[in-house]
Image 1 (spheres, rainbow, N blue to C red):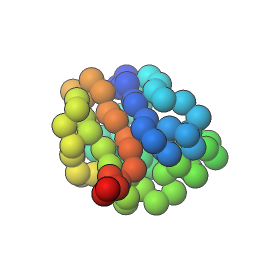
Image 2: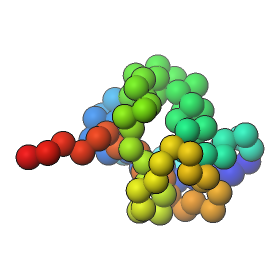
Image 3: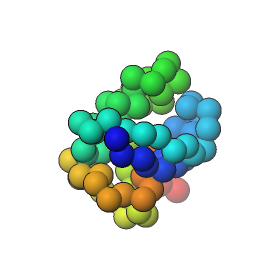
Image 4: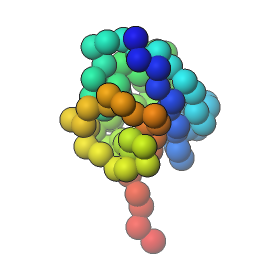
Length: 86
């Protein structure tokens, strides 16, 4: 098991119902995509928030990453919706 700090922003936070949490991840969760798939198994609020996981952006230790990025060694993973212009 790997312990990770997760931070949620904007409507991801609103739909999940919390701004951050610390989770124990199974050994098979090795990339950001694996993490998103795992989170969707944790309950309806996660399923709704991450329904279109291809639009969810991620940052590991405050650096933007792609969904195929390994999460090993991450201290914090942030999940947030796409940026909007304006």
